[in-house]
Length: 223
Image (cartoon, rainbow, N blue to C red; front, side, top):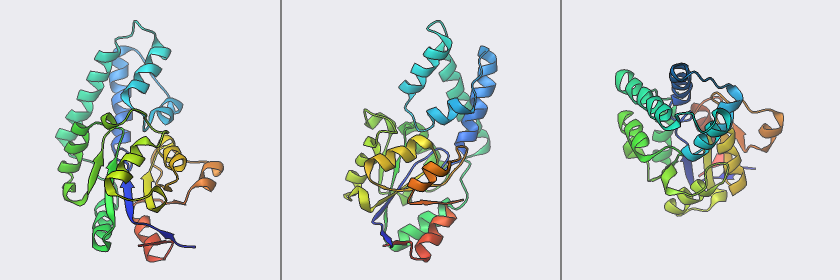
Protein backbone atom coordinates (compact mmCIF):
# COMPACT_ATOMS: atom_id res chain seq x y z
CA UNK A 1 0.00 0.00 0.00
CA UNK A 2 1.48 3.34 -1.09
CA UNK A 3 1.83 6.15 1.41
CA UNK A 4 0.67 9.56 0.16
CA UNK A 5 3.13 12.37 0.89
CA UNK A 6 2.29 16.06 0.58
CA UNK A 7 5.26 17.35 2.55
CA UNK A 8 8.67 16.23 3.78
CA UNK A 9 10.06 17.50 7.08
CA UNK A 10 13.83 17.32 7.51
CA UNK A 11 15.78 17.08 10.72
CA UNK A 12 19.11 18.89 10.46
CA UNK A 13 22.10 17.54 12.40
CA UNK A 14 23.07 14.04 11.33
CA UNK A 15 20.36 13.98 8.65
CA UNK A 16 21.11 16.87 6.29
CA UNK A 17 24.61 17.56 7.55
CA UNK A 18 27.32 15.34 8.99
CA UNK A 19 27.44 17.48 12.11
CA UNK A 20 26.75 14.78 14.69
CA UNK A 21 30.30 13.50 14.20
CA UNK A 22 31.51 17.06 14.55
CA UNK A 23 29.53 17.34 17.78
CA UNK A 24 31.10 14.16 19.17
CA UNK A 25 34.54 15.50 18.26
CA UNK A 26 33.74 18.77 20.04
CA UNK A 27 32.52 16.93 23.15
CA UNK A 28 35.69 14.83 23.25
CA UNK A 29 38.23 17.57 22.56
CA UNK A 30 36.67 20.25 24.76
CA UNK A 31 35.77 17.63 27.36
CA UNK A 32 39.44 16.79 27.83
CA UNK A 33 40.13 20.43 28.70
CA UNK A 34 37.49 20.21 31.40
CA UNK A 35 38.45 16.73 32.60
CA UNK A 36 35.19 15.04 31.60
CA UNK A 37 34.17 12.31 29.15
CA UNK A 38 30.87 10.82 27.99
CA UNK A 39 30.00 7.66 26.06
CA UNK A 40 27.79 6.51 23.19
CA UNK A 41 24.75 5.98 25.41
CA UNK A 42 24.90 9.63 26.47
CA UNK A 43 25.09 10.79 22.85
CA UNK A 44 22.16 8.56 21.83
CA UNK A 45 20.12 10.13 24.62
CA UNK A 46 20.81 13.77 23.77
CA UNK A 47 20.57 13.69 19.96
CA UNK A 48 17.57 15.77 19.01
CA UNK A 49 17.29 17.28 22.50
CA UNK A 50 17.15 20.95 23.39
CA UNK A 51 20.03 22.65 25.27
CA UNK A 52 18.14 22.67 28.58
CA UNK A 53 17.98 18.86 28.50
CA UNK A 54 21.73 18.67 27.90
CA UNK A 55 22.34 21.07 30.76
CA UNK A 56 20.20 19.02 33.11
CA UNK A 57 22.05 15.81 32.23
CA UNK A 58 25.44 17.49 32.65
CA UNK A 59 24.38 18.78 36.03
CA UNK A 60 23.27 15.29 37.08
CA UNK A 61 26.53 13.71 35.86
CA UNK A 62 29.12 16.23 37.01
CA UNK A 63 27.42 18.24 39.75
CA UNK A 64 26.50 21.92 40.17
CA UNK A 65 30.14 22.96 40.59
CA UNK A 66 30.92 22.00 36.97
CA UNK A 67 31.33 25.14 34.80
CA UNK A 68 28.63 24.04 32.42
CA UNK A 69 28.01 27.33 30.62
CA UNK A 70 31.69 27.82 29.85
CA UNK A 71 32.03 24.24 28.65
CA UNK A 72 29.02 24.51 26.31
CA UNK A 73 30.23 27.85 24.95
CA UNK A 74 33.69 26.43 24.16
CA UNK A 75 32.12 23.37 22.55
CA UNK A 76 29.87 25.61 20.46
CA UNK A 77 32.82 27.79 19.44
CA UNK A 78 34.79 24.70 18.36
CA UNK A 79 31.94 23.55 16.09
CA UNK A 80 31.48 26.98 14.50
CA UNK A 81 35.23 27.24 13.91
CA UNK A 82 35.33 23.84 12.18
CA UNK A 83 32.48 24.83 9.87
CA UNK A 84 34.22 28.11 9.02
CA UNK A 85 37.48 26.28 8.24
CA UNK A 86 36.20 23.27 6.34
CA UNK A 87 32.68 24.17 5.18
CA UNK A 88 29.33 22.53 5.83
CA UNK A 89 29.58 18.71 5.65
CA UNK A 90 26.55 17.92 3.46
CA UNK A 91 25.17 14.40 3.67
CA UNK A 92 25.03 12.17 0.61
CA UNK A 93 21.93 12.69 -1.50
CA UNK A 94 20.63 15.85 0.20
CA UNK A 95 20.75 18.15 -2.82
CA UNK A 96 19.46 15.44 -5.14
CA UNK A 97 16.49 14.73 -2.85
CA UNK A 98 15.64 18.41 -2.41
CA UNK A 99 15.76 18.92 -6.18
CA UNK A 100 13.54 15.87 -6.72
CA UNK A 101 10.94 17.04 -4.17
CA UNK A 102 10.85 20.53 -5.65
CA UNK A 103 10.29 19.12 -9.13
CA UNK A 104 7.42 17.00 -7.78
CA UNK A 105 5.81 19.97 -6.00
CA UNK A 106 6.22 18.44 -2.54
CA UNK A 107 6.48 20.98 0.28
CA UNK A 108 9.54 20.89 2.54
CA UNK A 109 10.47 22.14 5.99
CA UNK A 110 13.33 21.93 8.45
CA UNK A 111 12.41 20.97 12.03
CA UNK A 112 15.47 21.03 14.24
CA UNK A 113 16.22 21.20 17.94
CA UNK A 114 19.15 23.43 17.01
CA UNK A 115 18.83 27.19 16.99
CA UNK A 116 18.18 29.64 14.17
CA UNK A 117 21.79 30.89 13.92
CA UNK A 118 23.36 27.42 13.57
CA UNK A 119 20.67 26.30 11.12
CA UNK A 120 20.77 29.36 8.89
CA UNK A 121 24.58 29.20 8.77
CA UNK A 122 24.52 25.57 7.66
CA UNK A 123 21.64 25.83 5.20
CA UNK A 124 23.06 29.00 3.67
CA UNK A 125 26.60 27.61 3.57
CA UNK A 126 25.37 24.50 1.78
CA UNK A 127 23.52 26.62 -0.78
CA UNK A 128 20.13 25.00 -0.17
CA UNK A 129 18.22 27.81 1.54
CA UNK A 130 16.00 28.25 -1.51
CA UNK A 131 14.57 24.74 -1.23
CA UNK A 132 12.61 25.03 2.03
CA UNK A 133 9.12 26.40 2.55
CA UNK A 134 9.33 26.65 6.36
CA UNK A 135 11.69 26.40 9.33
CA UNK A 136 10.92 25.31 12.88
CA UNK A 137 13.81 25.98 15.27
CA UNK A 138 14.38 24.63 18.76
CA UNK A 139 13.68 27.98 20.42
CA UNK A 140 10.21 28.08 18.83
CA UNK A 141 8.83 25.19 20.90
CA UNK A 142 8.47 24.37 24.58
CA UNK A 143 8.93 20.61 24.43
CA UNK A 144 11.88 18.87 22.77
CA UNK A 145 11.92 15.59 20.87
CA UNK A 146 10.70 12.88 21.59
CA UNK A 147 7.72 15.19 22.04
CA UNK A 148 6.26 15.81 18.55
CA UNK A 149 5.64 19.54 19.13
CA UNK A 150 8.28 20.74 16.67
CA UNK A 151 6.94 18.45 13.93
CA UNK A 152 3.39 19.61 14.58
CA UNK A 153 4.63 23.18 14.23
CA UNK A 154 6.37 22.43 10.93
CA UNK A 155 3.30 20.61 9.56
CA UNK A 156 1.09 23.54 10.58
CA UNK A 157 3.46 25.98 8.82
CA UNK A 158 3.15 23.87 5.68
CA UNK A 159 -0.62 23.53 6.03
CA UNK A 160 -0.56 19.73 5.95
CA UNK A 161 -1.76 16.92 8.24
CA UNK A 162 0.80 14.77 10.07
CA UNK A 163 -0.33 11.55 8.38
CA UNK A 164 0.60 13.02 4.97
CA UNK A 165 3.94 14.43 6.12
CA UNK A 166 7.12 12.36 5.90
CA UNK A 167 9.61 13.03 8.67
CA UNK A 168 13.24 12.26 7.90
CA UNK A 169 15.28 11.61 11.03
CA UNK A 170 18.53 10.00 12.14
CA UNK A 171 18.14 10.03 15.95
CA UNK A 172 16.14 7.89 18.35
CA UNK A 173 14.55 10.97 19.95
CA UNK A 174 13.59 12.36 16.55
CA UNK A 175 12.07 9.12 15.28
CA UNK A 176 10.15 8.72 18.55
CA UNK A 177 8.76 12.23 18.09
CA UNK A 178 7.63 11.41 14.55
CA UNK A 179 5.98 8.19 15.67
CA UNK A 180 4.34 9.88 18.66
CA UNK A 181 2.90 12.53 16.35
CA UNK A 182 1.45 10.17 13.75
CA UNK A 183 3.85 11.17 10.97
CA UNK A 184 5.35 8.94 8.27
CA UNK A 185 8.57 8.15 10.12
CA UNK A 186 11.56 7.45 7.88
CA UNK A 187 14.91 6.85 9.54
CA UNK A 188 18.22 7.45 7.79
CA UNK A 189 20.61 6.20 10.50
CA UNK A 190 23.77 8.13 11.19
CA UNK A 191 25.51 7.38 14.51
CA UNK A 192 22.45 5.84 16.20
CA UNK A 193 21.58 2.42 14.75
CA UNK A 194 18.01 1.18 15.34
CA UNK A 195 17.38 -2.31 16.66
CA UNK A 196 14.69 -4.69 15.35
CA UNK A 197 11.98 -3.36 17.69
CA UNK A 198 12.32 0.24 16.53
CA UNK A 199 12.86 -0.73 12.90
CA UNK A 200 9.52 -2.56 12.91
CA UNK A 201 7.74 0.68 13.84
CA UNK A 202 9.22 2.74 11.02
CA UNK A 203 7.42 3.57 7.80
CA UNK A 204 10.78 2.99 6.11
CA UNK A 205 14.52 2.88 6.79
CA UNK A 206 16.99 4.20 4.23
CA UNK A 207 20.75 3.92 3.99
CA UNK A 208 21.02 7.43 2.55
CA UNK A 209 18.84 10.30 1.36
CA UNK A 210 19.22 8.99 -2.18
CA UNK A 211 17.22 5.94 -1.12
CA UNK A 212 14.25 8.20 -0.30
CA UNK A 213 14.09 9.11 -3.99
CA UNK A 214 14.12 5.42 -4.85
CA UNK A 215 11.10 4.80 -2.60
CA UNK A 216 9.14 7.44 -4.52
CA UNK A 217 10.27 6.04 -7.86
CA UNK A 218 9.22 2.52 -6.82
CA UNK A 219 5.78 3.70 -5.70
CA UNK A 220 6.24 3.08 -1.95
CA UNK A 221 5.48 6.80 -1.53
CA UNK A 222 3.18 8.72 -3.87
CA UNK A 223 2.59 12.41 -4.41
